[in-house]
Image 1 (cartoon, rainbow over the protein chains, first blue to last red):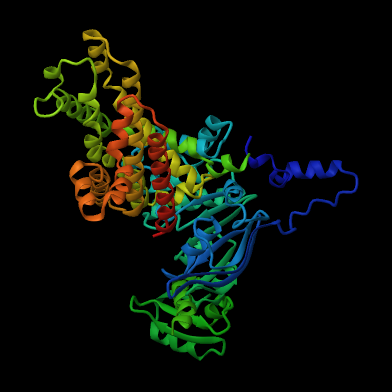
Image 2 (image 1 turned 180 degrees about the vertical axis):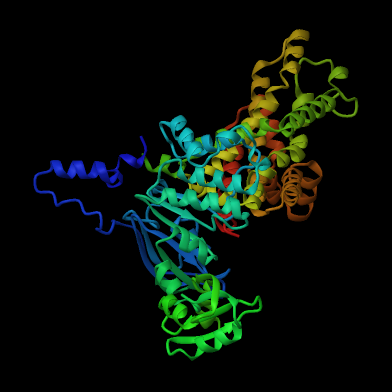
Length: 341
Length: 253
């Protein structure tokens, strides 16, 4: 049928059985890193005098959901267009599933599902006709089953007969995802999959992406760190075509200013007193009364100091106590502005 | 897969989608109706074809005006094909599928050509009438249809190039009409006289050999001459190749 028959992509349970049958096969390790599906080396692209992508190198393995983060114009889209073979790099190499993109774009395109920016689709076609065209272009033998499957996955059954131009943005984005999934690819490249959607539509698309991450590798771009935290297990921050940070969303969050800051409301007693007491503590980087009347205390070392805070509060009565995640947008600005300066 | 087939990967899917696309909206039907009214009018009009006055059992009155109708209508068929694809961004989707640039380009060309062929073949009642009224030269009629389809192919290849050049359908249409008119005007007697007077007989013969109208007329007379057939094939392929080169540059803008 499709490329799922490839031995690399069998589900773990099946893989375990197959390997157990072989006499000297090593025991299947859930923790073992997946094979490298995208390998990018020294990738560079200029538009005239502007360096859109400037010598980036990274690898993405099966099971990874890599978020490309960065301001507009950071080179995220350009990098993705080169991985899919739409743009040719000026320098550097890209291999997808071991196939060199420059040497065999067609073979690579069969392994990739791609959602371009703004999810372009043929507006005059119905959802089903559009997916049928994609299935035909991909030469799928069991096209009907594949279309049924992605209609189900992307929750599009109810609009299968509607023309795409009449759909809402959220539905259009899901049509784009369905199109990218129709051949059950190992590699998904999603360019700003949630950009321009309302919060409900965002949540639907994010859940969808999370549900797809098992046994694949996904690269998506976004300029919302929160989103990266929700769906990605790796975050790469790009700015001016260079990789500034290659880390995990959790590690990024831990670096964010105000990480583990404790915020609460003083119900009995003077908030300013409490803030002054907290500021005096040796672990505290500072405490202040916020405009809304709440008190926020920031730890110096970024550790969770909830117990220390509660101890310092003493006989004052407090409510709505919570530990804050940190100002991700501030971290994002700090990191990316360093280059721009 | 052989090298050549590989080069045109995806052509069939694009051809089918585009051909159905013409009939998915009223535009395709409107086009056919306009084409049939215009060709019918020019055929029987006293100022043009004078089919009824001539009382001859042939279709010269129909075919001799078709290239001039095509000058306007073929760019209308072609303008959408790439301009829309680039405007809406679907070109990126298309060319990251297992579809080559050549495959999609030729697929679109063949879809437009097939649509034009359907329109042209809908002139069958004229053939039917001639056959009823007299004893026409079937060879000439067959050759005229071949010539008409070949002329449509050349003009479609021109229109496709301008569609690949401009994201704006209207701009693509106007440029294609201008280029097609220029291409046809090479063949009118006034141009040839002018060229002969200023540049001499040799240049006149060269220009005349590039005349679509002359080759078209040769074919419609029932002479399936090799050099006239080659003229159409070479120019069609030439414009298609130029268009692919243009699209290779413009697809990412």
